Every structure is written in structure tokens, then in C-alpha cells.
Image: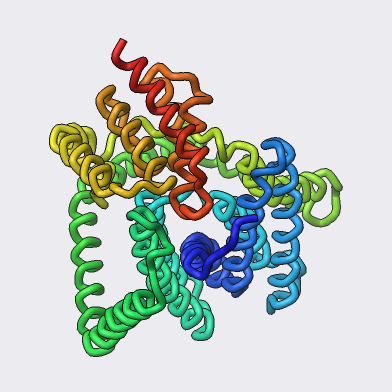
Length: 441
């Protein structure tokens, strides 16, 4: 078993916070504060997936992880149900905590596949989700002040952990990996993050009233614009409704419809007073299905996690725009982004000048990425290296096993370069040489 360094603990701990925070905040706003439990769950899932992979077959590993994840999620559910102020055992917050635990465990299993690109994308998406959940929950659910304060603290913790995780991920992909980081460097990095957040919170405290006024003004302006846009449709709908009312008023059509509604209401009242057992049974069945289907869907993800299909879009390998401007902007970005991406990959290749096993493996993998680029096959930022391997093999016309072996060696050398051996480096270089030779034919 490879030795775990404090740099890896810091990196994967911050990544666990990033992965667990969205589900934890949703459960918190519903009344179940399970943030710490979900962070620990994500970390345990990552460790279980990493250490079980070498000595368990894939299907056995997935079944074992599913069993472990289900048991841990049940524990989180019991914890949330016990702490819930709702008298019912299955409260809304406890049920959301159960779903969040299953989702967090699945995300934690993927932590070993993440790199700086996928982590940055996850951070951006999760940040938007957290802000929307905190703002929407505060306005719509009217939670108590303790829940709002806890949600705000989780948002601040997520932001700090996310910046630390992204910085460490970039360090991990440089020559020497995470091992080149010292306590002094981490201290400076953490201090910088704390200062930035303190300055932002101080600025928010001074401008909070002004910002609230501006936000209310923007919402009012937006509602006014939407109202003007929908005004013609509203007038047309009003005219149609008036015309229909005039037609029904001329005959007995409205009376007939009213009588039908009254008859249906009498039937419903009869069943509601105990006139029949079928509706109660049907309602119980529907409620049970509504509770079980999301759980089954999350469990199914455990078996589909390695077969995720790529979205058919090309993005810059190093720079991804936060905004999505549609196909036209995507095509324009493709014209200019390809050269930038290839230049970034070549710069990364030139920076790996060492003779260590990890550097040799990384050089071989980057050369494969450049070869895939030449065949118009870019790696989307939404994909991990393992998920990109089938597309790369198809674009290069290579056996899937050859590309998968090179990808697996790269993943091992990325965050744990000390575990890379000269034999693995030689195998990676041999795989690249076979790929390169086949491209020249």
C-alpha cells in the first residue's frame, strides 16, 4: 500500500468539501445539517475506491462499494432523522440527506479521476448551485436564522476549500507533483485565501444595504421588462377567455360542466370519508414510488459511472468560458482555441524535462493528447482522462486496451508520482511508440 502524504490528505480533503457541499446545503436548507457527515462520506468513498481498485475486479468492486455506500447513506439518514425537529420519521430534510449521501458517495468515488480541469469546472457549477440554493431557500422556505447562518458558513467553507483544491491540483500536474509543496508554501496559500475572503466579507458588510437596494431594483426592472414582453399575450388570452365565456353563457354548456365537476367532487368526498379503500392504497403506492425511484436512480449511477458518454462539444483544454453562447460562439472558439490548446500542451510537454518515471509517463500521455488533437478529437473539460480514453482510442484507431493502459499509468503518476516505477514508465513509452508508429503508416 503506497504511503499517504500530508499533501495528498490536504488535497483530497479540500476536494471532498467541494464534492459534498452542494448536497449538504440542500439538506441544510430543508432542516438537516449533515455537512460534516457528507464531507467525511466523500473522503471515505474516495479512499475506498482508490484502495479497492488494484485487488478487486471491476464488477465486484462496484458491488462492494454500492453496499458500503448504501450502508453509510442509511447511517446519514438515521442521523438526520434523529436530529430532525419534524415529528415524522421520514421528514423532508432526512430524505434529502439520504439522497445527498448517495450522490456524495458516488462523487467521492470519482475523486481519483479528477484533474485541474474537471475540478475547476465542478467548482464553477457547484458555486452557482450553492448561491441559488442559499438565496432561493432563504426567500421561499423561510428557514430559521441558525439554518441560514449554517448555510452561509458552508458557502464560505466551500469557496475557501475550492480555491485551495484548484491551486493544489495545478501544483500536482507540475514537475515533482504535490511532493514539491512545503508547509511554508501551503501556509502562504491559505493565508492569501483567508485575506481575500476577509476583504470580500468586509466589503460586503459595508455595502450590504446598498447591494440589497441594487438587487431589489434590478429584480423590479427585470419584472417590468418581462411584464411588457408578456403584455400582448396577456391581452390576447384575456380576449380568448372572454370569447369562450360568452359562448358558454349563451347555452347550457357551462351548467353541464359545472354539474360534472360537482359529481366528481361528490365521488371524491365519498372516498375521502372512507367509502373505499382503493384511493388510500393508490396514494400510498404513489408516495412510495416517488420516494424509491430517486434512490434507485442514484444506485444505478454506481454501475454507470465508468460508462458516461461524452457530450459532443469541443472546448479549450486549458481555458473554458463560463458563459455558453451557442453553436456560433462555439465554432468561433474552436477556430482560435485549438491553437491555444496545442500551445499549452506543448508548453507542458517542454516543461517535463526530468528523467523520473512520472515525468516519462506524463510526456507519453501528452503526446497522445496532441495526436488526438491532430484528428480533431479534443478532451472536453467535463471528462476525466479515463472517460476520454475510449474517444481517444477511436480517433487514433488504436486498441482500447493500449490507450487505457497509458491512461491508467498517467492517472497513477499524476497525484502519486512517487508510486510510478521505471517499468510503468517503459510500458507507457512503449504504448506511445506503438501509437505513433501506427499513425505514420
